[in-house]
Length: 428
Image 1 (cartoon, rainbow, N blue to C red):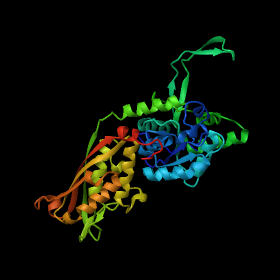
Image 2 (tube, helix red, strand yellow; image 1 turned 90 degrees about the vertical axis):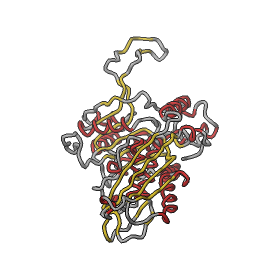
Image 3 (cartoon, rainbow, N blue to C red; image 1 turned 45 degrees about the vertical axis):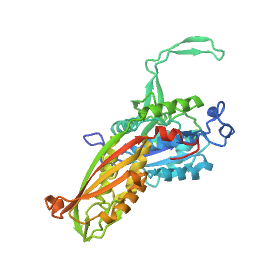
Image 4 (cartoon, one colour; image 1 turned 30 degrees about the vertical axis):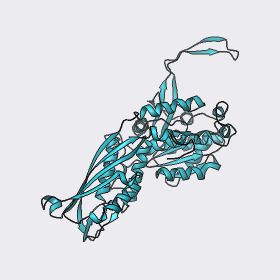
């Protein structure tokens, strides 16, 4: 087997390619047995497509994976007849890290195997496998599992067993007490070297072995599996009561009516021959902001404000200037991805106040178009977007025309109230 790429001093390969797999192709038989609406009980809607807080159950897991800056891309696995719908939801939520939606198999391990093969053309160093029925895993847990795998070769979420365990006959007669001191209950995500996990799946297929998690396949190959302490709230939706509990946890996590405020700042050098893109609008000028992307300093400042409000780092973490995928890209397109990350954390943009600092160009006549472009990118109404321009009276790099800068303040409100009032089949 191929070991993960050697780590640097911080335990992380500087160019490690980490991919994610979300397994959401299960039939959910136990979930349908009691308490569900007729269309679900009759099998029309798979468990992972049942709404949680107004959008499909699986989408919460994908949003959490997408919010982790260590993950480059993802593969979603759904029932074959739901692939098209899943792609539509990904597009609507701006989940651009989802590079493929593939049909699942009869068993969970078949579904994960299908996803692993979908990654074969650009194989990652590590792959994080997560269950679509675990919607509340935090981005922190995902990161800790990946960082453990980067350091040790694997990282699997689990919790120590705390309940007393009894060994009993099929009739229910207790035969003894089980020592729980070394027992752990497994969760996801589970992170392994891509090659090791693929070989484990293919060996199990060849040997006709059935397992309930990916760690068992890696164990069969003689590899060491390292545990990462999981989260009590990282529950698996198995029965309708679990869905109700997950919704209560989600609302509590969003903090009720708590709002978040973020501040962003960005500055770029102005260069001749560059288009002057500001707030998603190309403004006539003899120079434009220099940058790896289109250099849209105004949009960048707002993006940083959103990420800052959610404590998700800055735009350099999510869209590094060393990545050729972002060369020349439109910043308002990246802004839509940031808005999707916010939704994945349970927040939406409810207010933007941005100020452009430049001696030239003058932007007053372009402000309405900027407000419209930014409202569309960040998923809010135009009435929530304020764009202003000011100068520094000829002082400093903005005053001499050497560069251009922008400040932004954003307000985010929790999805809880708005989402829980949505129709059950709506998608945000």
